[in-house]
Every structure is written in C-alpha cells, then in structure tokens.
Image 1 (cartoon, rainbow, N blue to C red):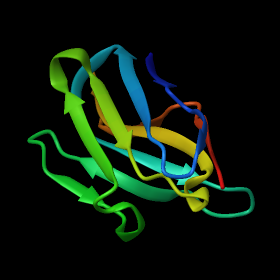
Image 2 (cartoon, rainbow, N blue to C red):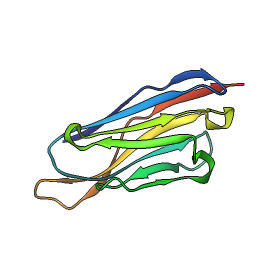
Image 3 (cartoon, rainbow, N blue to C red):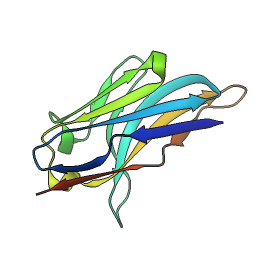
Image 4 (tube, rainbow, N blue to C red):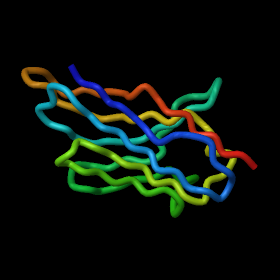
Length: 120
C-alpha cells in the first residue's frame, strides 16, 4: 500500500557530492518523520539524518556540516544532499518514513536502498 522509492546513488570521488531523493507514494493518510539510514556489510543500519514534519533535523556526528536533509511535504519527498564525501560514507542508503495509512496505526516503512560508493 505504501512505497518508498529512492534515487540518486552512485559512484563519486572523495570530496564530491551526491543528492539522494526518496518519494513516498500509496495510501498515505499522514506522513510523519522521515530519515535516511545507511548500512555496510556485516554492520547494523545506522541513522544518518532525520527530519520531523515541522522541519527539525538531526544528524549523526559523522555527517554533521557535510550532509543536509530536507523534505517537500507537498510531494511526500525527502532529500539528502551529501557534500565533501569520504570513502567511509560508502554504504547502502535507505529511506525511512513513519506513516499513517488510513484506518491503521502509524508504522515505519523502508525503501529498497541505493548504493553510494566513494572512491579515494
């Protein structure tokens, strides 16, 4: 009923930039907080950045001052602008959204993931 579709991953050299987008679609009654997570093989999925419905943001220490999260509520979209990328930013990035579907309780939904690779 709900889909999160990410785009914008790819290969970039260290110091470069990438912009990730995620669009939520389907039977969405209310879209609450949205976030980006990332995961590398054998490790847990970690939060990179989050944004509330009012626009309040939170960042992992490792990406502060380099990444910027934003959202377009009219388009059910969340953006992650990544600059000054480092090889350690290499990971699969996942979009997350807390969504209320009509006649149900809010729950988390996840995108399929998009690979970001930063070469040194």
